[in-house]
Length: 338
Image (cartoon, rainbow, N blue to C red):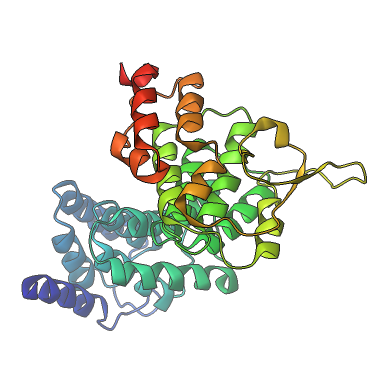
């Protein structure tokens, strides 16, 4: 641990050195020869996986780094999980008043989503980076939005994930399967409102004729088992009926209103287009599971959709179903357990 902290401190110390801008350097390079040499050296270190040496070379030998050099190094550091180096370099970009490219921002958000360590540092870093983007006017492309959703999903920030989804749809960009998976991941990590959001995501997938993946079902069942739907039934009704699509239907006077009672399945395609209303909040795991078809209903749904190689252990269904004997009798009939 002390060795890792020392290494992080060394990287940050290197990146905090005073710099000279290209306008003040006494060694102009109009032919770009020095820049090409520097870029070659950086690529040499990166190709060998020596990110620390690349950062050292950057801080020690490049007096007036160009934007493409810093961007390249940030992406390399991010892709290899060197989060401290990546965000230290990002700080250098901001100090030099260089506008980061969408690719650089995508790499940083992917670092926050994928790095297996430094979770506390990354949680604060992803929030700070996101807050900086709007006021600074930094560019974001489709990949950037997907990386942002993935990063915030890691920390269970469902509110930010759905805000980013709205931005994605407002730009006319499609929702891909991986984005749905990341949204469901966020839901499964939100103990307060995760179940309700998970139902919204699953309804959007099933009703758009997209085939849910194994991974998506894993996160969905986790949300059913561990997550609630708040403490306000009015908020539940509003959010549950909020559509996840680019052009949501407008409510009409003839729109059907469906009062949800025991035995209703919120994932039933017949409810598509209906306004669903709860009179009281569902209580406990068994009621939440019943509202999405129960253990048998979900297993049949997966069988009908030919979702194979299901990852969730049988015990997962037994634990949340409350009727283990029934579930165990039903399991051998499913295609994916054969």
